[in-house]
Image (cartoon, rainbow, N blue to C red; front, side, top):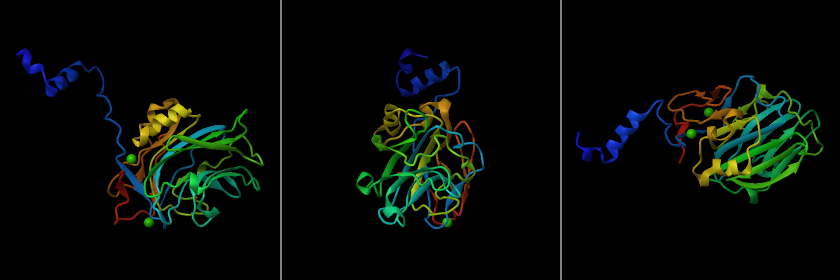
Length: 263
Ligand SMILES: [Ca+2]
Ligand SMILES: [Ca+2]
């Protein structure tokens, strides 16, 4: 083969393949599909596997696209009477504020709210990250990041336990399984870490709106990672995190398509 034929893109590909000693490098990040919730009865349920119970640190990241009018969304767990870890917006309650709710035990109604001026990204994709710092010295601090920007924190009062209770059996994306408040929005790229991502890691994960693989950040702590890249009539939400706990779609029917392009 003449030397000149080794120039050019195709020749470079040949050289790379010949030199590869392991599996090919992963494809570049793409949002691919997202899941569109109808606001009527759609949600993703999960088996009762350890996720929140006993946690003193947690990071939850997701992308959400809430329609301009009437869009609600929820992700998290809630058990009766009042053990909660959830991020949600509910237009019929709490004046439609974006809320992180962390409570433990009856009567410990404790949550952090953000007014609409801090979340006005309707009809477009927004990246939300909640960090829970339960251990001292943070004293059950909740932090919120919107599109990579740290918006502040609150200490919860009255202070519930620094350790989350057993709410894993009710973990759902799109609804509280104990009081639905169904989601009318698109959701994508949900990651849950047993640990605290740094400001720098969260900015990098957001990547100026282009996203990045959650597996690139503290993969040793990434318990759940849902990429929402199903299609057609798929009713399983595949977990690419350490736990491998898939979710089951409930209430989704076609048409219209519920797996939609994230664009
Ligand atoms: Ca996706
Ligand atoms: Ca439905």
